[in-house]
Length: 331
Ligand SMILES: NCc1[nH]cc(CCC(=O)O)c1CC(=O)O
Ligand SMILES: [Mg+2]
Image 1 (tube, rainbow, N blue to C red):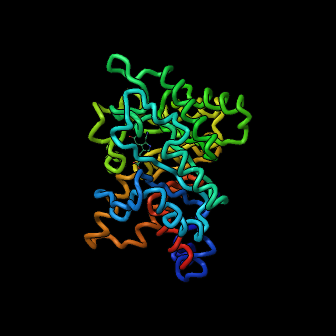
Image 2: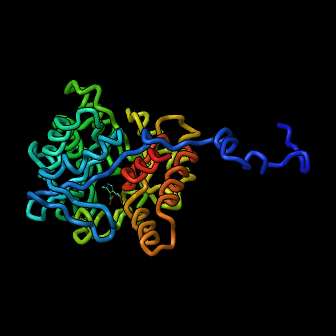
């Protein structure tokens, strides 16, 4: 590579006008990159705010179609669904996860009927259903791996049968991708996709999400025995390699902004569809500053999402999906 020198070479020339800035732009963000996570809740006529996530709602099924309509109009490709299970339906084993008429399954059927073109992503983990708020089964105070995988595979099957298009295991048990793939295939669901939360860190940035679900107060201890240590990046590559070998179609890195280095490494090494989750704590952090007038809302949203694309992400799960899609339309 020949590198020019000042004064012949001036990098500001290409920045001078909008037309050259557009021509030399290396990365673009489009609506096709956006996945919108939504919280669904039991009851009728319910639309409650999540205190730590200003602008984000928990919505009951009778209001769900109206809630999702703007996403359909804006042509957002997919939604990630998160059910809120009332405490009386939670138990040690997360039994409600396997109920074919649970909130998640009812929401999936409703959305498939109303908006057949929108992809549905189902989170597979036990934490919305357990009384202890952990993602797997607990034996003697420890989240056990293989018995948890057995349950998670039933949970995945239940969701796929209800019409979930993309199964997204977020539990971080070893071997769950392989078991889920085999089970889906054995049931003839060979086209149900798997987006693995392959690289999920034991992060402080999930706090507001746990508030939204009501699992934060229930959670005993932390998730460090199954979610990754934020200090590690080589281990992230091993996690991705294993999940791909087990049949994952797409992989995810989570959280997002504090882990852009991981997204870049994963995409460079494996060249597979790689997604980032801009999680609840990132949303809360930005919204707090935006609401204080300390950051410019529109520019902050778009810059944060563009940074994921620059790092190599193919798409982003973001609570800003609707806002971003509207901003992108405005151009
Ligand atoms: N396993 C459940 C799950 N799926 C997505 C998130 C977090 C998403 C967010 O913070 O926006 C979590 C929380 C957790 O692992 O405790
Ligand atoms: Mg793994």
